[in-house]
Length: 271
Ligand code: HH2
Image 1: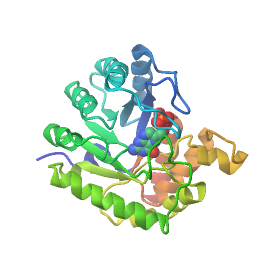
Image 2 (image 1 turned 60 degrees about the horizontal axis):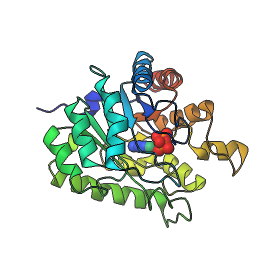
Image 3 (image 1 turned 180 degrees about the vertical axis):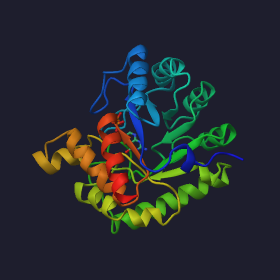
C-alpha cells in the first residue's frame, strides 16, 4: 500500500524553500549555484525540515515565465546533489516534474493545481508522487492587480475541491494529496488573513493543508505599510503558528530553524 501523505509529512512538518532563481522575491539569486542550493537544502534538513522544495521559476507578483530548458538547467543539478534528502519539485511543467522524480524527488508542488500542463497529472500518478494543489486567482504576471471574491474561503475551497477531483480522476491517490490556499496569489491582505482565519472551510475537504506565509509581502504590509515587499522572519513565524492552531499541517518556509522551534512549542501546547 502507498504511504499516505499524513505519515510522510505529519502535522507541523516544515518544508524548506530553495529557489534556484535570479528573481524570487526574498531569496532570488542566493541559490543559483547548484552547490550552494544543495548545501542550503542540507542545512535546512539539519535544522529540522521534513522536506525541501526546489523551484526554478519565480511566481512572485509580476514574474515572467521561464522556458522549459532554463527551468531544467536550474533545478536538475541541484536535485542531483540531494541524494537521500526528501525533495519536492516546485513546478507546473510535466517534463520538469518527470525529470525531478526520476532523480528521486517524492513530491510535486504545483501552484497551478494541474491547470498549467495537461501532462502533469499523469506524471504524478505514474510516479506515485505526493502532490500539492494550490489556489491562484489569475496568473503571476497580473494576479495582484484587482483580486475579487464574494466569499474568499468558500471560493478557494470550491476551486480546490474541483482540482482534487481532477487529480484523483487522473489516477493520483487521494491520500497522497494536500491542498494550499495560495497566500498572496491573487489576494488582498484582508483576503489572505481571512483565509487563515477560516482555514476550517478548507479542512472540511478532508485533506491536509499546506500553507506558505513565509516572508510574504502581506506580513510586511501589516507592519510597514502598502509599499512593503517582504515580511520579517518573526512575522512569518507568528502567522505560521496562527495557521497551525487553525489546523494547517505543512509549512513552506525560508527560515527553517525558527519555524521548527516555534511549531514544536505550539504543537506541544495543543497536544
Ligand atoms: N508560494 C510561492 C511559491 N510556491 N507553493 C505553494 N504550495 N504555496 C505557496 O504559498 C507558494 C508556493 C512564492 O514564494 P517564494 O517561493 O518564496 O517566491 P518566488 O515565487 O518568487 O520564487
